[in-house]
Image 1 (cartoon, rainbow, N blue to C red):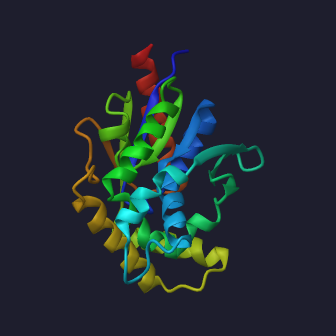
Image 2: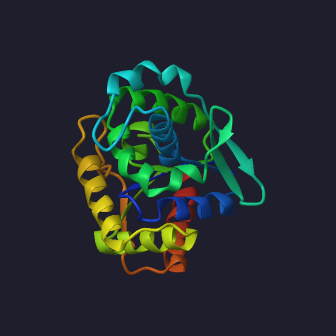
Length: 231
């Protein structure tokens, strides 16, 4: 059976990674969370004092990009690949609200995007890939056989993210999460380099009122139809 490339884009906290992992596991495809790569660079910037609440030393970060090595290693217990920053597993550390608060700023830096897009394109050379992010269908894989654009109301997305963080034990308020979601939306859609936009040939899915099962079945049906047409 021929393999295809599946690009899943959309706003933060729309469950892109969840559905991408499910589809990749079902098809036995490679799953890549492009957002984790930007989060890892953000973590590097935070830990090296390159970005704070008051300052962002962009040129210093750009000068240190060659010091940042990213890789993915498959975790058979989890069923997906975890991201490593300079040889260290940072999958848990990149999911904090602090990283979420800075990641859109870091992702707006053209030099950062250029570095990561090169890595992402290389991963997808042999197809059989499900990748989610902000510009996968428009920049990374403009020729992907299936492009999906995920959306949901800001309030729904904030509630999902809040529940996830509380389950992890983070001390956070819903209001803070909602503020983070709306701020990220603005930065993601208004940055000059590769802003978040729906590709012309992408299929939009609003999952504000969909269960995880309903969402999975909807996307899987699109995948099956695409594979049938691709044969």
